[in-house]
Image 1 (cartoon, rainbow, N blue to C red):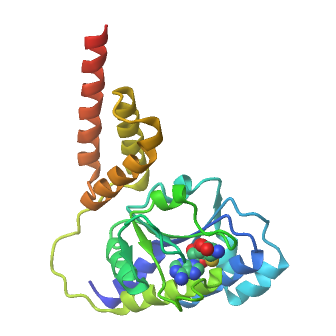
Image 2: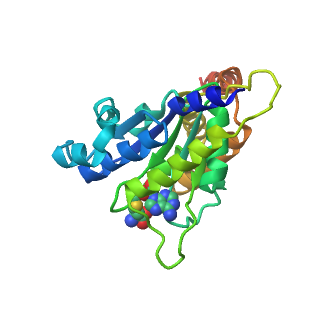
Length: 250
Ligand code: SAH
């Protein structure tokens, strides 16, 4: 793949802001993106409408702001993505696979050559909640001063966008055939819904434990990164098991 092709990949990396509170930070994000060659911005349920402050902070990146898509949920924002990485300033208790910005950027740029990918950022006050982090295959934490680890939202986007650009500028000499395309986020969410409802109907979950168990199952399936055909095979198997159980009950 040539350097130019790699640079084109940046157009397939979506920056998603969940519940952004300050329009100024959204403008700052647009600018941070455009200077690094990113253009796909999606706002999930922003707390306030874009205003003059947003436009002023975007400076020469008003086009990125104008083209930003708004969705009600994170699921809609990343439905077509085959890799979704969530960012968090906090150390989490769950052992979710974690990357620093450089590792994440390499992964995102190489996957973006065949499908859209996303990096998800949380709101200024509280960051991403667990439900959003559960929808991300991996977590990204920018290494910081342990005593003061939370960057301003648009500054965090800038660090990640810079690493994406650096990664895109690396020439690659990979002669392997087209990389395998994993299932999209929407297909994976369909699988998790199906798995959870089948296991629940079979009485496998104690209601209080279902959250923790589903999180472990999510981790397992994210690690396996199945493709669309494999997800459909699993769902076909789940359907057959449910029908067999219904047959036994009737
Ligand atoms: N008070 C929040 C921090 C919000 S900062 C908290 O404790 O989680 C707003 C967003 O910027 C975060 O949700 C995250 O997306 C990003 N961010 C800030 N600092 C970061 C860091 N050190 N590593 C990764 N993302 C960070």
